[in-house]
Length: 215
Image (cartoon, rainbow, N blue to C red):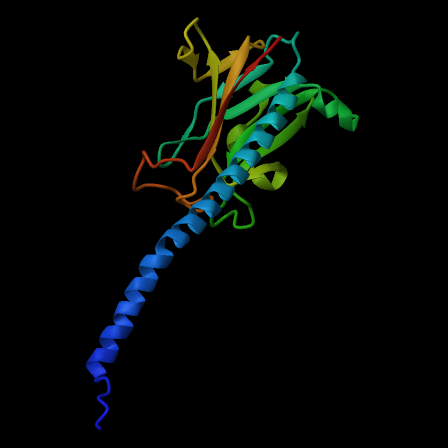
């Protein structure tokens, strides 16, 4: 009795079908695992943004309320239409370090050819015994500041102007207002410090906005 074996073509077809079936079976698992990782990253990023916002709020709560020129907001837009505003305010924070009251500055610092050792992100500077309008913010370097949160490429600051929520000033200089809007964000689609020139409406992976009232 002659036993018939499998031909090479039949074996190849069988292997191919097995691969297809395995891929179809594992696809939902792979999607689930990827979604879990993305969700974990999203929560981690939101947590980092929330901690940063709380840090800024605590800083602003120490702002001086009697000075006539206590707060200054500079409207600035980085390449790629990313908000890159500058927040400066008089505060008593330096007194913790036995320094006179002065100005705290928040601003995004980018890396680059001349600043290769700078980690791009949101930075904080302290200038004891200086008013906000005396700070040369264009010359600020991350080397002289404190990194608050790496990877931040959106920092928007606005002052409420009217009764409607959308009535906001992008530029401001003067006494402490009734409140302030702050928005910070990170973009997962580009590495920190990389300029986005292809898609100006590229969706942020995560962003957080808060309204901070002044009593």
